[in-house]
Amino acid sequence: MRLRSLLALGVVVALAGCGGTGEEGVPQDLDAGPTVGADAGEAGATQTCENPLGGWSVTFPGDWQTNTSEVIDACSVFDPEPIVLPEAGEIPPDLAVAMTREAVPFAEATQQDAGAAEEISSEEVTVGGRQALRVESRATGEGLLDAGTVTYTYYVDAGTGATIVARTHDVEGTDYDRNRRVLDEMMDSLVVFDFS
Picture 1 (cartoon, rainbow, N blue to C red):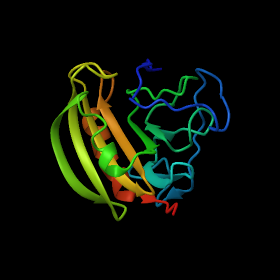
Picture 2: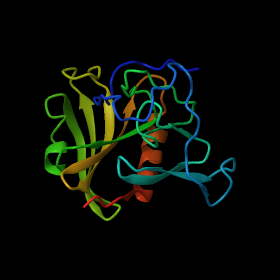
Picture 3: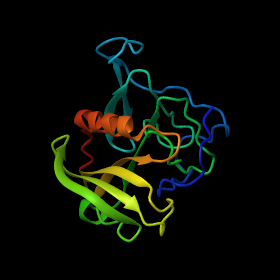
Picture 4: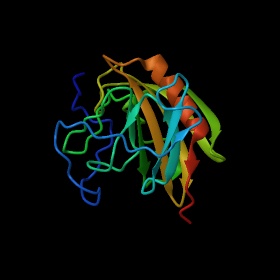
């Protein structure tokens, strides 16, 4: 089993209201919705999951895993390996993709990493019919990530003063190029729930 770093993704999720505590070190079972298209075991197959609290549904590779709601909201982290989350609710940066809902307006959320990261590229895009920003950045070492760590992030305006943040990191033991491609595909499938 890969070593799961306890460095935070930059997001610490409180355990209160997250639906249970789970057992530390025990992989969470796949908690995805129905398979879309082909069977989950076939090449190119996908599956879809929902995060009702985060406000989204998303499609991800059929041979990947997602988390249940034992530690954090279901359908928040994705990886080709079994997912093990620490009890503290920190999302390790070596997971392939992590998604969170930030209670911060879109304009503010896109500036949250200022000072902790240098922008490599930035592009305004549309995701699920909503304004979004796709950013690749390099950590300065002033935040929780080691200096030089590259991060690929989508900020999606979720409305009602909230932003969905989806990202992957280029850290040891990960396939950053593959994870970027998968994250792009996931954002093509993202459906944001209307909380208004």
